[in-house]
Image (cartoon, rainbow, N blue to C red; front, side, top):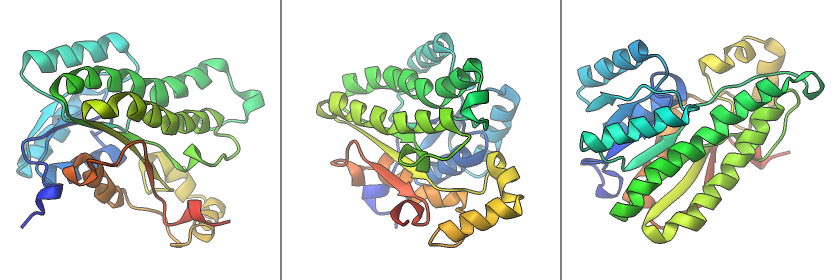
Length: 255
């Protein structure tokens, strides 16, 4: 029997970047807990495929294809939800990109692209979701940070700055929205097995560094974010606000 504290039945969750990767894993976890999922991505065909797979597994899912960096598209999407009677109870700001280059070689356009995708999108989508959540007096916002919300690593400056910003954006959301019944928190994944990290996983030197640096001595699995996501999306976290939970095998806790 599902613990009612973690039961998401009757709730709707918009998970950005959920047609694949970490977003897909978290969306599946929320769906198992009972939530209807609004599947997001920039490729409508991939989004539709993911929706079909969710439904085939017995879950409720709807397509929500839009570019998270396009403010007009975001506003249209939420207006579409309103017109369809869809209330976003849970927002997971997961969509993100990586770009590796030394800062002295980094073009401003590449810097801005990473900031826009990883940080500004969370603000814009969070703002649109919160307008509706405030009116209802309840809502959950989960922003996806990173180990680089706390710690820097060479060659990923824009990603580091964006994810550091995610931590403070989460606190700003809590400061402004908590009294309206909204909980805004974040998850900071460690080094996870994803398509985005595949080149690093395949690099023997980097693979050995991750395993040596992480107390768990391994890479994380996408499904290992589900527990934190369900907790932060559920009534179990109703007095948790402005926090970031690191799911990193202990890496951020040791020298």
